[in-house]
Image (cartoon, rainbow, N blue to C red; front, side, top):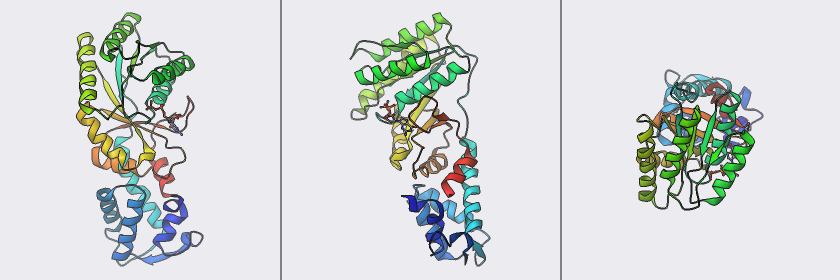
Length: 298
Ligand code: GDP
C-alpha cells in the first residue's frame, strides 16, 4: 500500500502524519526499532532481512535522538549495501552462441522479458535467435513471435505439444550455423507438475550440451516483483528444477512491493541482471541499487 512508502512510511514510525514527518525527531529506543521492523516487513522485505536491517540501523544509536531524514538515509544506505553486490548486468561471453535459458512461472513476464532482451541485444549489434520452448502454450509461442518481429529476431517454433528439447536442439543447430551471438530459450512455467517440468528442463540442458558442453551459459529466472513473498518461494522451487544463475525482476513499475528484492538479495545473493519497468519493448532497465533504495525509502 502507498502507506508503506514515502512520507507515510516514516510518518508512522514517528507517530505523526506524513506532512510533519520530515521534521520529526525521536529517541531511538526498542519501541522504535520494533516499529521499524514492522514497517520493513510490511514493505515485503521478509522477516529475517527486516530484523537484521533494523538492528543494523539502530546499532550505536540507542538513546540518541534521530530525525526522519536520518532514518531514511540509514535505511537507504542499508538497502544499497545489500543490493550492490547483486546488481550485475547479464555477463556476455565470447562463446557463440551464448545460450540463455529463461525459466519462471507463467505470468511472471518471461515472454515479454525475452522480447525485451532480444531487442536490447539486437540494438547492441548482436545477432539473436529465440527458441519458443514453451511448446504446450500456443499463446506463448504466438506472443513470442510478435516480440521477435518487433525486435527483428528470428523465433524458432515447433508444433504444439512437441518436445521442447528437440526444438532446443534444432535452435542450437541453427544458432551455430548462423553464427548467432545469443540464443534465448523460453521454457514452460507449469508448476502444477514439478516432476514433469524438472525432467523437461533437464532434457533441454542435456541435448543442448551435446552441441556445447558449457551450455546453457546462463539460466535466468524471471520473477514478478508484485507477488511479494511468493517470489522467494519461486526461487527455492526453481533452484531445485534448474541451475539458476541470475534473476530478472519484472513489473517494478508502479509497485510498492519492491521490498521483496531486498529479501531476495539478502537470502540468495543471486545477481539481478535487469528489471522490467513496463510492458513495452524498451521497458527493461539495468538494476541500479541506489536509485532503487531511494525509490523504496521515498
Ligand atoms: P509469461 O507468462 O511469463 O510469459 O508472461 P508474459 O510475458 O506474457 O507477461 C504477463 C503479463 O505481464 C503481460 O500482460 C505483460 O505485458 C506483463 N508484464 C511483463 N513484464 C512487465 C513489466 O515489467 N511491467 C508491467 N507493468 N507489466 C509487465
